[in-house]
Structure formats: C-alpha cells, structure tokens
Image 1 (cartoon, one colour):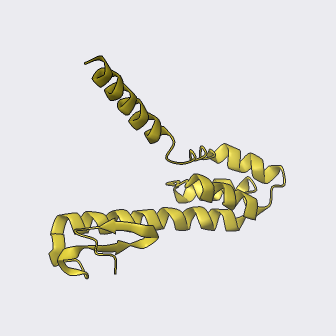
Image 2 (cartoon, helix red, strand yellow):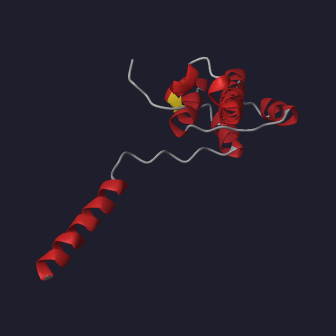
Length: 129
C-alpha cells in the first residue's frame, strides 16, 4: 500500500512537472508607452517589430491612438504591422465565430473542418492530408 501511494505521488509529480516544461514562456508584450520609448531611443523599426512578433502582441487601437503614436515618433512600418496583426486577429475571430454558428454548412472544407491562417485547426477530425 505504501509503495502504491509513493508511485502514485511520483506519477502526479511528474505529470505536473511535465506541464510546466512544455516550452519557453512567451515574453510580456510591450505597452504602447514602451514602444514609444523604444522609438525615441533610436531602436530600428525591424527590432521593434521583432519584439512584437515574439510576444504575439495584438493592440486594438483607434485611429486617434495610431495618430498619437505617429506624432510621438513611432515609425510607420511599426504602426502598419500593429494594424495588420489586429485586422488578422479580427478576421480569424469572425471566421471562427461564423464556423461555430453555421457549422459545417458554411465551411469550404465540408464536415471535417479546415485550417485557418497561422496553423489554427477548426472543425472536426484531422486526417493529416
């Protein structure tokens, strides 16, 4: 009985430790003020975009927010990237919502679901072809 408890405890401990080591933690997305400070510090636009890509940051900004960031010195390429990421996420959310609402009737892949951009699988059974 004691060995059963010990082996069960070890199994549970291993399961929890495996969950914590699945991969590196995603970096914290920079705030808008941090993006402005990076721009004012002379950080190249490519490096700022790389930071945003690594953190998978999505910013829901109004036109006034974008104008304000532009006036504070954030490069146009960074603002374009941030806006494109936001639009992509909105499109994917709407596609997922439509798929969940209408089901397989609205899916171009039929009953089995399909791939959405960026590797998101939506739908039924994935056969791998």
